[in-house]
Amino acid sequence: MTKPKNVLFIAVDDLRPEISCFGKAKLHTPNLDKIAARGIQFNRAYCQVPVCGPSRISLLTGKRPSQPTGNRWGLGSPPPGEPSLPGYFKAQGFRTVSIGKVYHRNDDDESGWTRRYRDTFKEQPYTVHGYCAGYQLDENLRKLRNFGRQFSQAKAGLDLPPICEAADVPDNAYPDGIIAQRAVEVLREFQGQDDPLFLALGFYRPHLPWAVPQKYWDLYDRDDVNLAQNPFLPKDGIGISNLGDFLHYGEEEIDRTYSDLAKYSEDDFPLLSEAKQRECIHGYWASVSFTDAQIGRVLAELERLDQLDETVIVLWGDNGWHLGEHRLWSKTTSFEESTRIPMLVSVPGLTNGLPCNALVELVDLYPTLCDLVGFERPPHLEGLSLAPLLENPHKEWKAGVFSMMHQGHARTLRTDRYRLTRYTYVPAEGDLWHLRDSALGHAFELFDLHNDPGENVNIAGRPEHRAQVEELDRMLTAGWAPIRSQAQC
Image (cartoon, rainbow, N blue to C red; front, top):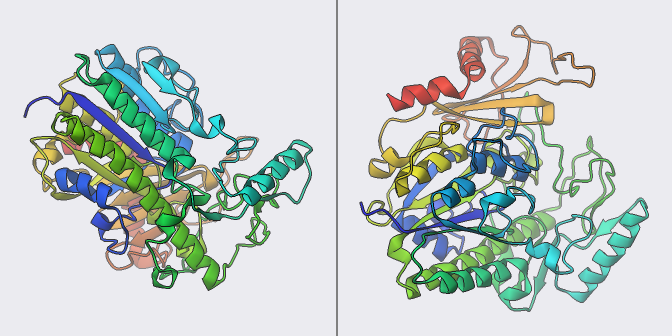
């Protein structure tokens, strides 16, 4: 394989595998499908933390969230001697360019980039006090401005605009359209230069709100969207989301929410009407197609410049998203919908559209890219290079993958057949308090994904599964290092 010249590194916010090539035939995603057809599609890829900031930091530093840099919203600067992914590529001679939401915060890892375009939401009147918006209709912009004034005065009962918007405007009216346009401009600017390019793009949609041009809504019939098949809590379940997204991160003020959603508390989960569920799923699908089209603009420019066959393309979602499963409309859970993400890797001359069902993680991407461009891997990396899977997608691989979240101090292990999640809680005084008494001293969820792929029945408390819980708990406690070592043998 000839070493590729450039890397196109694409992050998509809150994108679950709701893509045509992942078996979602109703979705209109021709450009993501094109990447999959040229690459390898990882069908069982998982994030380390099912929320934007920590997930991205883990991937970009190459470290697990249990490490100091891995489980927080902002990175600042990487520790000495532990360069970030863009920082390492920059040190090796790449021009590293960031456009959009790559890190969660737009001031993280400043030294890692040759050039950084600031967060497009903050360049336009799209956002108020960090509330990610991106509206275009006049009535929604007025509501957003009113929200900002009320927010600054600490008034209760605040309303954002509606959760969905369909505006008859061009793509570049929204931030993701601007990101694609800037990417095209960067590709043209650096065309013909000797130094290789690491171009990182961070698209916002399908993150809330689902505000995209009308033409992407028109791709779908709302009556034809697929409602969740399990809109109920798991039987004998333990953990649950804090509903942060529909509350729009308003944990301290429960009444801050989108204007067309009912107010509710952390203990009073919203039961959306079927009509509102259909609207929300329609909005998510339209948002996925909008982002797909922006990615298509970048791919078309690569092809026009004859660079497509010189460019490694990596596409990943930072976390999944519930579309009504377990009556949730959020991330921040230990379930498949929240932790499983799409991952596509296209390498000219090596990958050719084969799927891979190995268990892989976002933290694996940093060492993988080092191998693909011929760099020695930095010693601090904690993932496992996927390069062997690119050559042989059927190769025996990891026995399990790991995720974590703050809610309930949860740690979860996903193996080929099972998901075990262990919940504990650490109060302010620092003493460990168990959520629920059990013979093992922790609260557990165990789901048999072969027989219960929807994770609808927690079998951890059943006597016949005690040995399985104990075995998986030992693996969870031992952590990622033994599993990585076994896979390397």
